[in-house]
Image (cartoon, rainbow, N blue to C red; front, side, top):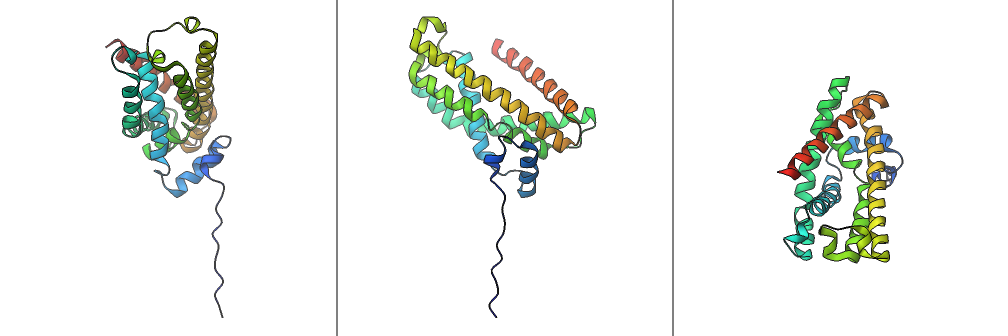
Length: 207
């Protein structure tokens, strides 16, 4: 007798389910392996972080546009992975103040997958840069760009807000899952993390 081939049923891709179902997605990811998708997520997060730093630091005063974009591509993966490593460690550490149980690897997976909406920010940011060019990385006043350019600048800003808020919502939901506590404790954990990172960023900008 011929043996019947066994078919392995696989669920929807985490790249699809993460947008609306962060808790079930993080469960599925952790069953695969903690590092699943980490390089691509590091790339997405790293591009966002580098371009945001370049905008706030007005890198356009010092180097041409192509250097900024090349730097974003070259440093995105290592920089993004390091940032996610730090973020995961902090979310694990702070969550344990509230009785959380997530390991650093589990919290790092949450940090990585909850950053997926940053892709929205990256798309809008790159669209804005394609219109404004080097002016995006110079000290600027949006009204001085003119009507059309100001529209694209505000569009990029709106995309950034949407991506950030969406990412925070996913982070709170998924973190509650891995820490095995309620949403309020998860929100408090994320809030403390955000306050710490914001304070640290301001200090680095002044340095």
